[in-house]
Length: 182
Image (cartoon, rainbow, N blue to C red):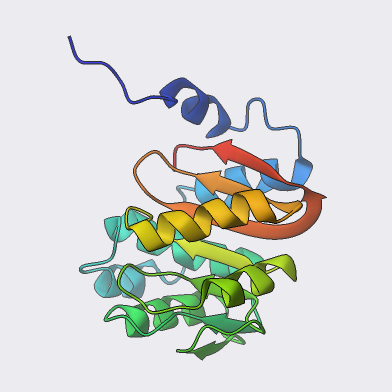
């Protein structure tokens, strides 16, 4: 008998917005994470998605998150995928200034596997209502920074997918973690 992964029912319920009491989180789940309608830049995002953690769907999701958050300064680290990540972010928000170095002044951070980053700078940016997108959290460094985001910051919403992606959205709401299927 094949058993589903732990938390599958909660991810299924929260993925449709059921049981989510924060209006902001409900809107984020319904309009960003679970959106299935086509966006204007999907053809170019699909061409950039080769080798992206999570594939084409997670690359599209990164573009939708950037379009929703409208960042001013986006930091993508210096991994091999940083050029693709920077382009995907600018497709979502043309006004975003994309930089390779992750600094505390960034309000949108994409943490890629293998990228060198300062965890304290990530936490400082997140505490200032920044957004942190982790397309694949399966490395020890990314697991540690996600755990610090969830435990050390008193505010903000964390959205965790069972397959490895995670998003921390800094806002003034009390800290809460949502297990979401996206």
